[in-house]
Length: 130
Image: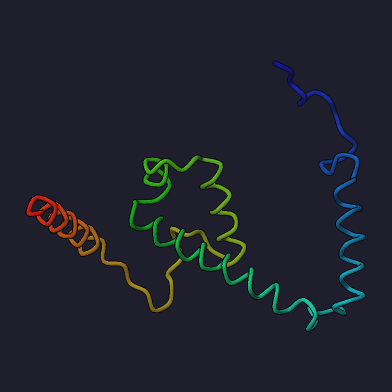
């Protein structure tokens, strides 16, 4: 197995290829959209940003329903996926999902688990009667 950690790069950016490409792209977008996000890109960005926020809301809910980091691992999420989502959540909401209180949302863990148990029983009963 090759270990590249001892091969020093000029910077954490490596040779800066991706950064230069991004800066060129950003300059081009700036010409189209203006300094602030202009009307040319706003609908597209809003469409995709909304999906990201929905994902982060869901992550917050599952984080609390499953008991945090270890609960998500028990569900089968990898450590890297969990850390990636924590980072995105913190960028969006300025807080760790464990500490953040979602305005207007209160989770009732007991009712959630009892409700799923009742649904499972009802489904099993219906299956046995058919």
